Image 1 (cartoon, rainbow, N blue to C red):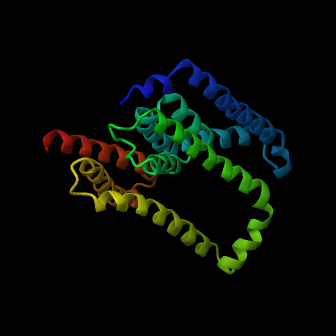
Image 2: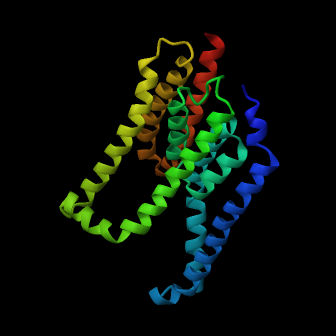
Image 3: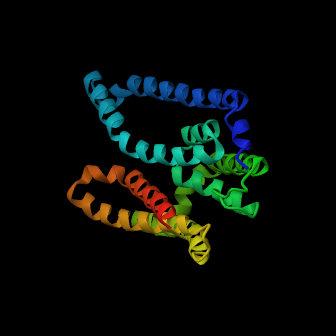
Length: 239
């Protein structure tokens, strides 16, 4: 039942999402003003600050495209307001997608399941919100201790920290995709498996190509997801 999308895209939900997103804009303006005001402390001229801002804005386009592609996918399931709001304040597209998927699995359904309904949508709002709240709470309570813990774990080697972070992410998303592959013979999950496999193949070759064209690396996530979506749609229509 897709009737829940009428509520998910209702003016009331938009009204709840817009103020939160506006706070992000206000914070960005405050940070920008303080950065300009503090430029002289590191011997940056106003011209240098303007140039740095332009470089940062341009370099952010690539990662933003990956987030935008994920938002389009989330909008089809959880509606525009929640997807827009979550990715505006968090910006971690894979994390928000994983939270929505886990919320659906907790209800015994898939994120794209035809049975996905209003109760599942409500559950997704809680899971995504609590996930973000946990980040904020952890930041407030443990930021001052992270440096010491990181040093103990890595032995002072930042490369080990990166390896641990990547391993944790691979484990989390590997678990989610593993459940899809486990049921690959099921006609309902086959398009999802095709999307994941084709995206994995695409990202492999895109990473190879981005070594020759470094600027392409910023767009790899978005391109791979588009390829996965296209392959899944093509597979579903052909098979």
